Length: 107
Image (tube, rainbow, N blue to C red; front, side, top):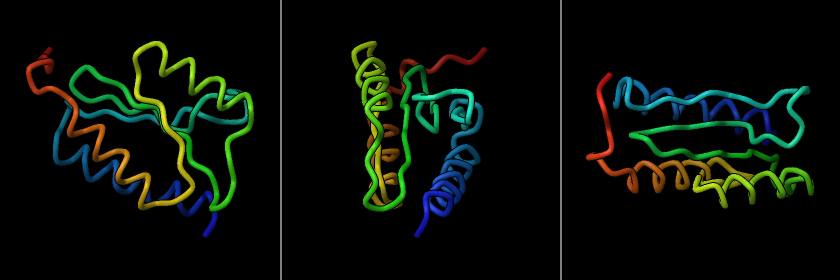
């Protein structure tokens, strides 16, 4: 299993959630070769944010990625990394379950 495969499966799951929750759920793939250290996905739901870094099985984030994840967490975001699909889904599900429905605003 490669990081690209994990990314593909996570994106498919995020699309399912977006279709289920509608405009209250938003995600964006943000990392590329010009954004060193930034986690792969930014996910927001009902006013809260999750930053998720995906790695190939057995790989760990680089020191800069760990630093950025810690800074994002200190700023009040949920910031996680994983190297497998199951943990990614679990992390996303935990994030969704912690989002307070009262904080959702319709623009």
